[in-house]
Amino acid sequence: MNLSQIDLNLLVYLDVLLREKNVTRAANHLGITQPALSNSLKRLRELFGDPLLVRTSEGMTATARALEIQPLIRQVLSEIEQVVRPSEIFYPAKSSRVFRIMASDYAEATLIPAVLGVLRREAPDVILDVVTPSDVTFLDVEQGRVDMAINRFDTIPQSFHQRTLWTDTFSCLLSVQNPLVFDFTLENYLRSKHIWVSKTGFGVGVGMNPKDVQRLGWVDEALARIGQKRDISVFTRHYQVATLLAQQHDLIATLPSKAATLAHRYGALVLREPPFPIPPIELKMAWSPLLQNNSDHRWLRQIISSVADRPGDQEIRARD
Image 1 (cartoon, helix red, strand yellow):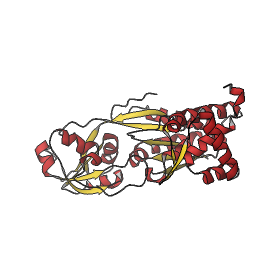
Image 2 (cartoon, rainbow, N blue to C red):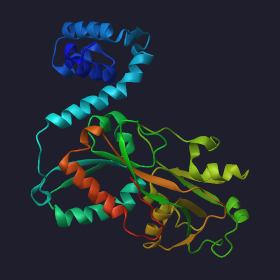
Image 3 (cartoon, rainbow, N blue to C red):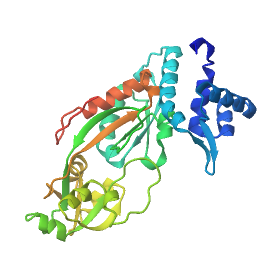
Image 4 (cartoon, one colour):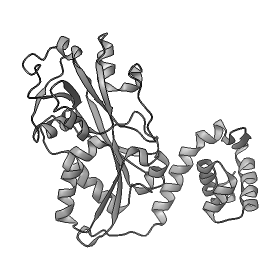
């Protein structure tokens, strides 16, 4: 089939249909009638020789063929949008743009203050709206409703652009009054009470189960590899709270080193290396292909990358 015979609007309709998986919602999003979109879906099925979306007990479900072509269609439409979009010049000093950033508690504490310091000098009227991982979904990022996500991710949609901002090791925080300060061995670590803290990924979180090692995260998985487990006394999703709790004389918080070092500077706490190996973590910045060539978005990414590249208390490695 010749490309000139294809109505490219059909690809726009298919992109929305595969996101919404509902003809009525997709039609409302596109500003057309439901019968018109149903007719377009019929033409799409003929074009691809596949049902694309089928009705199941859970609603409209994408076929294997539809899932295969979905990222390709999203990429094609993104590139077309960039071609036809007028070229814009971004003036940071004159801008009052709001940038919405999804950031984990760890990223918000260790990265955002330094980024804000640069923005106050270069773009004093630019506003940051920092939201938590439970506030947004990957779809929000993909559609550009959230400018970027900064977190440690297990998986990121293939269509997203991403950059590793840094790698971080782990450190333990103890009160200066903790009797283990001068005898921080693995045996004593395991005998102690611990603070668990973590919040990654997207979506609303659920309660934690101390027996579910796979969901407990980096520290507990590292302990499981040497056949050990720690005695968790409190679960929190906030690194700042963990550092406050660590000031109690009988609790230990094992945190990414950047967060631990930040807390150590302002509290009556002692830093110690974990008495067992814990693999480092990567902090990543991810954004939608829709915003890849946007001038103001590109400016903010450069600011964030330059801040992340600065030497700190731990070794930082950044790469595209």
